[in-house]
Amino acid sequence: MRETTTPGLRMKTRQAVTQALTDTALELFDTSGFDQVTVADIVAAAGISQRSFFRYFSNKEDVVFGDRIPSAEEVRAELLRHLDGNPPWEALRRTFRAAAVQMDEDTGHWKRATRVICHTPGLRARYLEKHLAWTDALVPAITPRLGQEAPEARLMTQTMINTALGCFDVALMRWSDGDPGPSLAALVDDVFGFVRFPDA
Image (tube, rainbow, N blue to C red; front, side, top):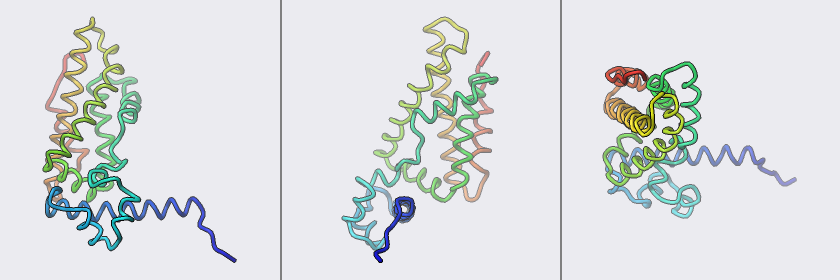
């Protein structure tokens, strides 16, 4: 009788191969530099063909970003969870702390990915594009809660969100270069604690 592979098993296998390729590529990027590593280098280290590589990733950039960085919609949904009963600045802290807790659960992957992104201008630019998308998604959720007249409320909201993103980036960079160092969640708490917004 011919054996068949269930869709669930195929998905697990694909996830395992994707994870293995990502780990191999990130180690190379972190050691040698993103721009110096080619797809040929990655597949040689992973023991697969280039054709197989492109079944899983469109390009090198997708290896770094994949689908693990939250979308704007996911970040907004997390913020809305924390806005009930909390001032906007505290809700933002809790939102980014939730992301930090998840990243702390896979420290090796995220520290390497963060270092690669921070040290590669092209990847840094793509990451900042995600920041802009997050800002656009979060502004409408926070602005009505500040109790100020527009456009002042929108201006304060944009300032607050961009400050939160800056705080998260500072915590990320310190965390990714520290070994072992404090957890990312702890660093997020520390950095956000340096900033105060009136009535927020």
